[in-house]
Image (cartoon, one colour):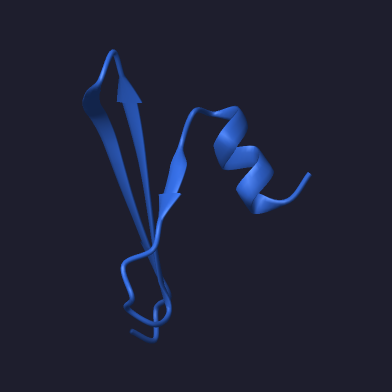
Length: 44
Protein backbone atom coordinates (compact mmCIF):
# COMPACT_ATOMS: atom_id res chain seq x y z
CA UNK A 1 0.00 0.00 0.00
CA UNK A 2 1.37 3.42 -0.96
CA UNK A 3 1.55 6.58 1.12
CA UNK A 4 -1.64 8.17 -0.22
CA UNK A 5 -3.67 4.98 0.27
CA UNK A 6 -2.30 4.55 3.79
CA UNK A 7 -3.16 8.14 4.73
CA UNK A 8 -6.66 7.74 3.26
CA UNK A 9 -7.15 4.57 5.32
CA UNK A 10 -6.29 6.63 8.41
CA UNK A 11 -8.89 9.24 7.39
CA UNK A 12 -6.48 11.91 6.10
CA UNK A 13 -6.99 13.92 2.94
CA UNK A 14 -4.12 15.58 1.09
CA UNK A 15 -4.22 19.32 0.53
CA UNK A 16 -1.96 20.86 -2.09
CA UNK A 17 -0.21 23.88 -0.58
CA UNK A 18 1.81 24.85 -3.64
CA UNK A 19 5.02 24.70 -1.60
CA UNK A 20 7.66 22.35 -3.05
CA UNK A 21 8.95 19.44 -0.94
CA UNK A 22 6.10 19.76 1.56
CA UNK A 23 3.03 17.65 2.11
CA UNK A 24 -0.03 18.66 4.11
CA UNK A 25 -2.77 16.29 5.23
CA UNK A 26 -5.85 16.97 7.30
CA UNK A 27 -8.57 14.93 8.94
CA UNK A 28 -12.08 16.15 9.69
CA UNK A 29 -14.84 14.73 11.84
CA UNK A 30 -18.42 15.94 11.57
CA UNK A 31 -17.29 18.92 9.50
CA UNK A 32 -14.63 20.04 11.99
CA UNK A 33 -10.88 19.81 11.53
CA UNK A 34 -9.45 17.42 14.11
CA UNK A 35 -5.92 16.79 12.86
CA UNK A 36 -3.29 18.46 10.67
CA UNK A 37 -0.12 16.77 9.52
CA UNK A 38 2.76 18.68 7.90
CA UNK A 39 5.48 16.60 6.28
CA UNK A 40 8.79 18.15 5.21
CA UNK A 41 12.19 16.75 4.37
CA UNK A 42 15.20 17.41 6.59
CA UNK A 43 16.72 19.46 3.77
CA UNK A 44 13.92 22.08 3.76
